[in-house]
Length: 256
Picture 1 (cartoon, rainbow, N blue to C red):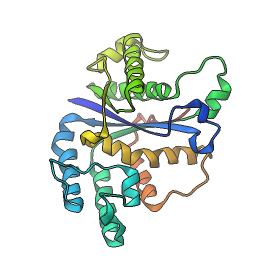
Picture 2: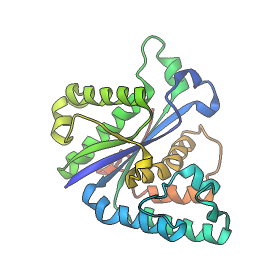
Picture 3: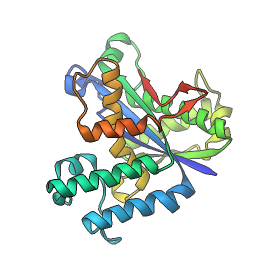
Picture 4: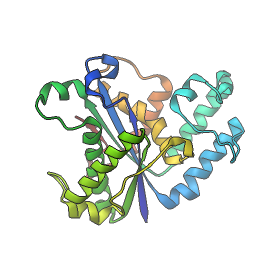
C-alpha cells in the first residue's frame, strides 16, 4: 500500500512578524492517508457531501476552505440557516470520525525561536516540515509501507525553497534519521505541491483540521487563553483517536 501525507499550515513563516501576538505561531499539519482509500472512500464521500449541501458539480467543484465555511461566505451561504448548519456540521464530523487517517501536527513559537537563535535560525516552515517528515517516516517504518508528500502551494519562490529543503533532507538526512531511512520509505525525492483549488480531498481535510489542532496545542502550552468553540472542540475530540502514536507514545503533536 502507498500512503500520502497532505500538508497544510496555519500562520506564516515570517520571523519579523513574530512579536505580533496574532502572528507569533506557525503550525503545520500532516494528514496521512492510504492512496487507494482516498480514491475509494474519502474523495467520493466528500464530494457527495458537497453535492448534497452545495450542489457541487464536477465542472465547477466546491472547494472546502475552513474560513469560508465557518463564516458562511459564498458558496456556503446556505449554512447561515441554523438548521442546515447543524445538519452539515453533524455529517462532516461523522466523516472526520469514520475515515481512516493519521495526523501529525507541529506548532512553533516563532518569537521564542527568533529570540533564542540570534546568529543562525532554522527557517520556521522548514523546521516544522522536518519534524513532520521524521514522524511520517516513523509511521511508514511501523507498518512497513512507502509513501510520498503533497503540500499546498504557497507561491513560486516559497514553493521552490520548500522543494529544495525537502530534496536536501531526502539526500542528506538529519541528526535523527539517515538519508537511507528517508529514501527507503519515500517514493520520491521531490515534494509534490499543488493548489487547493485543484479539489484535492486530502488538502481540504488538512485545511479543516489544522486550526483546531493548532489551538489545542497552544492551549496545552498555556499560550492561548480561549475556549474552543463547540465545532472546533468536537474536531479536537475526534483528533485524539487520529493523532499518530507508536507503542503508547504520542508522535502526533509537537510544540517547538
